[in-house]
Image 1 (tube, rainbow, N blue to C red):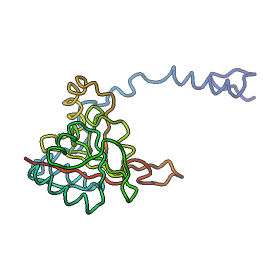
Image 2: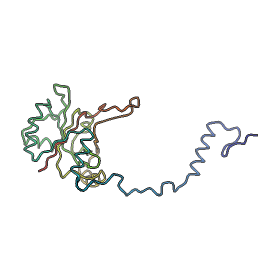
Image 3: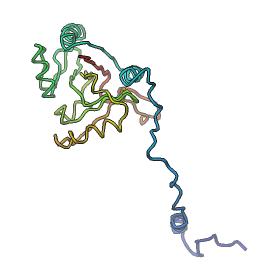
Length: 223
């Protein structure tokens, strides 16, 4: 004679039997299953002392397909933009960051406060940033800095201007350092960009550049 499994009674439906097994599993689970997880130790490999945060960021960022341009001064940035803009048909450049608009105006570089695609049907956006993360080659952008919630998803080409003092070791360091300022500026959105956009959602194949910037360039001013 076939015995009724533990937790089940005769006459119960298949659905009731499944729910009974789930209830038993919840009741019998060990409360100490995850008690030995270390939540304090950094899971990333430590940055080599001889490389430092700056070199590590550049290597990680370029490995992810990013374009990196090192500049020794703001004047070099102006000359670089005057050359690269016409060469790559970047005009008009979309800019919503108040700080970046003032910076561009100071050096006589033109921009548009509204999104306009260029002659190649590309939307080029330029902004400053909050932090650069060495461990992952990521860029941290808050909406309080960009004054836009759509720039990171709408632009085809993202140009990010940063300074060497904005490079930090880890995401944890960036968030802890940025928190007071973000609260003060009432920032509601924080975007962490790590390389080109990619997804496995389309027929379980890796597809890049399906949304968001197709190219990301960092201009690092060391002055």
